[in-house]
Amino acid sequence: MNKKLAKIKYLPNNFEIIEGGDHVICAISGKIINLETLNYWNVELQEPYYSYKEAEKKRIQ
Image (cartoon, rainbow, N blue to C red; front, top):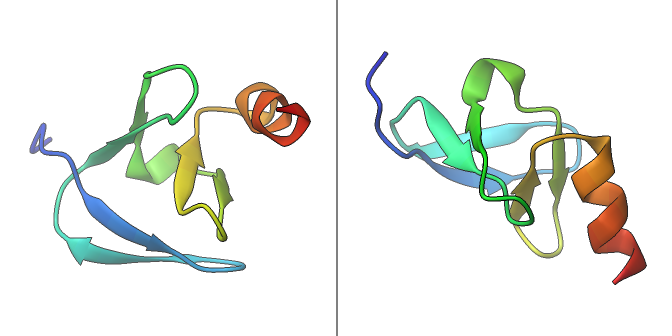
C-alpha cells in the first residue's frame, strides 16, 4: 500500500486516476477510502463518499 492520496476524476459509472495513489478522503466524514472499495461519488461535485450513508447526507444538504 502506497499510503498516498490519489487524484481522481469521477465519471458517471467509473473513475479515472489522474495521479496515482491508493486512497481518497470522504468529502463528508473525512474517512480514508481505499480505491479498491470506492463505490460512491458525485460526478457533478467531484466528491467521493465512504458509504451510501455519507452520499445520502450530502444529497439531503
